Amino acid sequence: QVQLVESGGGLVQAGGSLRLSCAASGRTFSRYGMSWFRQAPGKEREFVAGINYNGARTYYADSVKGRFAISRDNAKNTVYLQMNSLEPEDTAVYYCAESPSSNYYDNRESYKSWGQGTQVTVSS
Image (cartoon, rainbow, N blue to C red):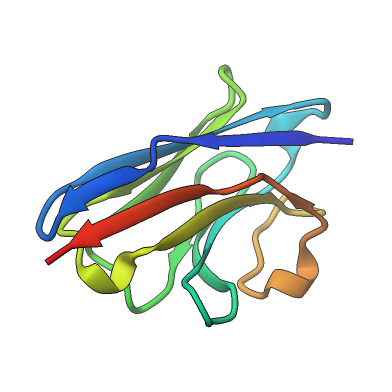
């Protein structure tokens, strides 16, 4: 059973940047794809970005493409989400999730392992 712990959230002004981290333990991290999702109040949890097991492939939601970057350090069992040019619409709880395979998926139903989430608030 994998444990996922997110960190790095906070309050930032529009146009600012944050870097989220997700530390994994309990399973061989380097074998599995990873993704970031987010959930705003009153909305469903939505896909943000995914990365395959070795970092060679990434994929982004249209809403964050060009502003966010997902990466991973398999030696540290950690996946990151660099968020630049933040907008108030990016305000949400951000969750990392471990894929059941070496690849990533853009639907939340494919994931069974989730972190507890970290709050990101972007003020206008």
